[in-house]
Length: 199
Length: 216
View 1: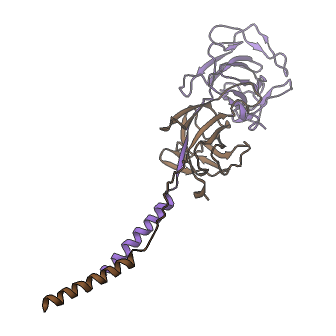
View 2: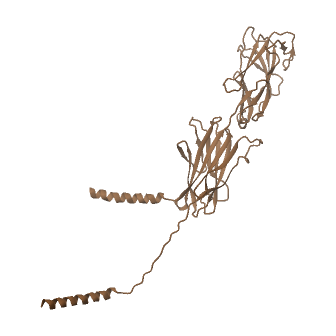
View 3: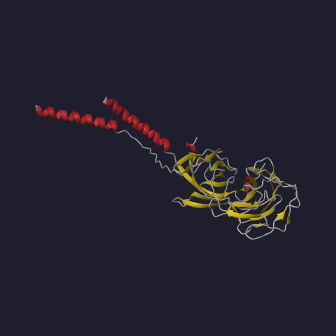
């Protein structure tokens, strides 16, 4: 009696399982998308550089103040990332423009995000086309003032596309408050960022 | 209370991650390191270039202002007065910057001519700018005139001294260059007897590129 009921129950269970297997055994096909993202590179370097010391001299044929621009630092890729400017034997009223071409050697357009002038432990933001007065020795007299601008180079000066360049002009003017036989030093840091992140 | 804290922490973490994304822009930095070395404006009276007519170092006959009001003098046949010259380094920088002139036992129409060289021993071109005589500033002294400048140094209302000055105003001296400076001094009739007349002459140079700006 009990054995017969059990056999029937097992049979019914097998039939139900078979019918469910038929329901799940539909045909199917899978499509896939394999994604590879190769990122670009934001990379800028100093290209050509020069000063206008020799071409904007006053009428007197006398080379009193000399300007030297040298290459100071390179990154791991061997790109020039830091210039060294030395202005020797300057005096109040002396003014010189330092020009540096910023070459976009990367693959992403860039824009100037910020320019900062650093001396001692101070940091002063530089805004394009504005003079900034500096009392570098802290004696209460203004020693220098500097002006950051864009030189006329045919470019638009707002965005540097890959392979393109912009030329920046840093004008340094020695003021009357500068001391004789003194040395004044400062550093200007330009940060260029991906074009779509700079307003 | 604990549930609120547990809710706030994920929100904070989400905000932090959003900001991280916002600040994580790609950028590259370029730098310019700048050094400005200033020069020195410096000049001096050259030792060994002092010349005069009537020194006190050895006996010499006096000179008389025979051509007044024009400059020039004739030597007399007596040694009565004399003029002593001394170079002084007043700021101890190794340069002679002051010429002390002491006239001893002089009298009306006593005449002295003093000349010397000034030398640019700095690194910046300079221009001979002005002369200050007892506080009076002259960017030119009797230009084009034969007569010199009359002074009442003792303040008694009467001129006691007449000075002529050379015309090197505005002359540019590049580093290492020099120029001649000369002055003539005549004691006038109204100088008081038995007194000491003291005055200072200061000769100023200015950096070459500021001469026009600061010269009237």
